[in-house]
Image (cartoon, rainbow, N blue to C red):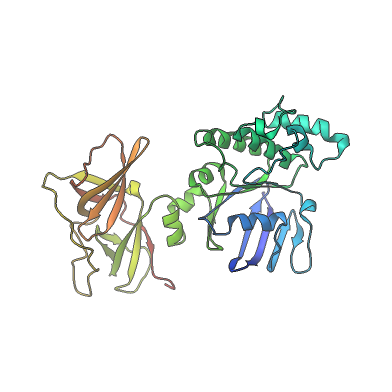
Length: 370
């Protein structure tokens, strides 16, 4: 059974006006964990804490069963068994590829180790080149080889693909994943790219303003986000305004089953993913949507538009995404919903459509404290 290999226990760090934590996080041996979040959320700071470039103000950090940082213990970065690949790769421009990889190794065994690593990362024959003679992908491989040279217990990657051309990133992601799986290397990497995180990681940790919102598998993050922020940050989410009426929730797209007890009249957000929204073209002339309307007060029924799970609206935007298109529809209440449709379907701008939700038990976000 996999055991916790990297642990952050109640860790908090203050850097000027910024504060990360307190939170706890564990990574199992051989696991690949992505840290995802907007700029300024604390992703790189988290890596720097594990690497030993920042000291926690509270809590403890444990690697392979040994405390490397708390209020009474401190292990220097070079003694933690951690390898780190920086966002800009941080290669020495005046050193060759072989010299960059060998930096920090004992001279006696460096030649054999460098040759082994060059083959491992697919750069056999590049030993005598300099960083400026390499492509971005090749520089990344050199930085990765250098970080692996000392057989680290943990590998940390800070935005490893951000400096690569878009068409090169999928190839490098695939190569890196195969390499790390073969090495069974415990890896934590920072990214702002959701596609990258979902493709590579066993689990994804989502940060917001220094707080850990959720850590889970990519599928669970998408299907069962723990907070509104995760719901909106991961993929696309439609959050419809709703009100509890008995055993259901009334929204602009009809009534949905109330999946948890909530007081009558409670205002909630109902999450529906774009692939759960179906559209049907209507032959009636286009219309202008009404201004955004408040939800009905007690005793009123204006919040329900049409039969259960249905409503009407206007197509106001289309965005093509390969073989699919993301269509935005403005409902008669003024709310907007997005629907994921095959690229071949035809819903012209300003055309009137019927909107139907394919689930009658969507995820519900009540007010804070409920």
